Length: 307
Length: 218
Image (tube, rainbow over all chains, first blue to last red; front, side):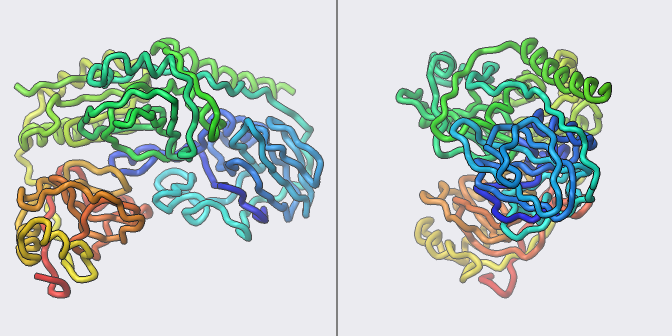
C-alpha cells in the first residue's frame, strides 16, 4: 500500500487522459505534462499508460507499507525519502515504512510519482485519469485525501539507480494564430505576442488565466464550438485563458491562438505570478517540435534497454 | 446555399462551421447528418458537434489538407435525413423547492407560474449539442416569452437534475455544478452514468419533451 499521509494542495491519479467522449461533454483530463508522465513510467519499466500520481505545488507526504521501486519526474518539488533529498527524473527504491515527502518550490508546480507495476485503479470511460469536475475515474472519482490507501504490487528487488534528462521547462510558449483574430480588434494577436503575461491566481487543471497591465478588450461573440487543451480564449475583458486538460468540451469565447502540442506541457509548471511570453510558430514547426519530444522518449527507451 | 467555412485549428483539429451563429433547423439537421458521417470514420479520435459547427480531432495531423477538402465534399453530399429522431419524455416536478426561481421568473416575465410551466412543457425541443458538463444537453428553442439572460450572479451549487432556462435554451443538469441558469424544476431521470456503455441518455439530434409531474406545479 501507499498511504496518503498528506495530499498537499492537489494530488490526483492521472494517465494520458480520456479519448472519444468529448461529444458527450466528457473532458480529456490526464497528466498536464505527458512527457514527464511517460518518462516516470519508463524509469520503472511500466506499460506506457500506467496511472501515476500528479502532485500539485507539493506539501504532500506518502508512506510505503511495502518495498517497491518508484520514479519522480516533472518539476523539482524538493522530494525527500526519509529526509534524504531526491532528484526529479530519477528512479529510487523504497523499503516498507519509508516516507516520501514533497515540499514546495518557487519555480516548479507539478511532479509525477510512478510506482513500479502501477497503482491499482479501475478504468472508467477508457481511462484511469481522475475527472475532478465530474467526479469519476481515478481514485473514487476525486483528488486524493489524507488516509487514502493506494494498492500496488510489492517488489523486494531494488533496480539500479538511473536517471533521465527531462526536456527543459521554459516561459517561452510557441503558439499558432487563432481562427477568430479577424473578428477581434485590429492587432489583438500581435498584442498577445508582444505582451509579457503573468499567470493569475486563477490557474488550475482546467486552465490558466493570464493578466497584463494593458489588455485588448472587445465585445466579439462567437457561437459555441468545440475547444480543447491548448486553445487560448480571449474573453471580453482581454485576459487570455489558456485551456488545459480538464477544460470543458465547448466554449463561446473567441479563440485568439492555440499553444502548439509540444509546448502545452510547459503550463504544468507555470504557477501564479510566473511570466509567460508567446512566440508565433508555424504548423510544420509544431509537428517538428512534437517529433523532437517523441524522439527524446524513444532515445531514452533505447538507452535504457541497452544497459 | 448555406455559407460555411472549414479550417485547421491549431495543428490537429479541423473545424467545419456555418457562418451564421443561429442556423435554421434544416441547416442544423444537415450538420447532424455530417456529424454522423464523420463519426463513422476512423481518421479522428474525437468528433465534437456544436450548434453551428462540428470539430474533428485528427489521428494523423499531417493529413489535414486532405480532410479539409473531404469534409467540404461530405457536406455537399449531406442531405437532411428523413429519419425520425429519438424522442425522450422527461418528467419534471415544477416550482416549489424543486424550482426555486419559478416565482421570481413569473414576476420578471410578467406571466403566471402556471403559464411558465405550460409554455416550457409545450415544446418538442432538440438537443443542439452537449457540453459544459458530461451529458449536459443544450435544448432549443425555448418559447420567446420565456427567453431571458442568465442570472447576474451564478449559483455556486445547482443540484443534480435541475431543469433550467437561459437565453433561448433549456437544459437539465446531469450532475451538481455551479451554474447561472434559472431553475424551474427537478427531473429525476438519470442523464449521465460514466459506468454505462452509452453514458449519455441524450445525444445530439435527439428530441426532448417535458411532462409536468403532479408532485409539482402542473
